[in-house]
Image (cartoon, rainbow, N blue to C red; front, side):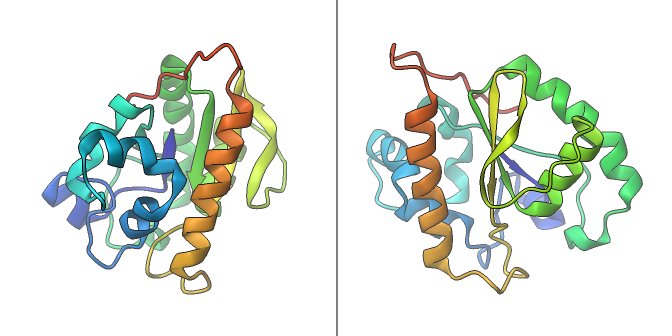
Length: 181
């Protein structure tokens, strides 16, 4: 399950995750091993925001921590994180994903603090804290406002997440259900 901070006003308007053309999510995700089964299954080289509703068929769900649109995540009040993190936790608990990957430290830190009451100081990659059996993972935020990361950094992050998921899902072949929450 991929968890973003909140939807942009534009994403809500068009009805798709990471919809703004300048966002680096879809270009990076499309080049990563994490999206390989989706690209093969959909018979496309590049995934676009219009493919977001198809991803659950391939074990990849998407949601936001805060379900309130804004022009920029920096405009969100801390009260929204306090309000929405427990709600997101309940949605995720119902879905039971094996791995929950947060797109950005703002979403992750808020979820840890208000959703799990954890004081872990996260770094990119896997976390010590879990939500039940679900493993938590931190990715950089692909927003154009996050200029300290290049496209290749995001691709590498998704590839490392794919490797982590492969190691984290039981060898029995059971897959984690990840429909959108």
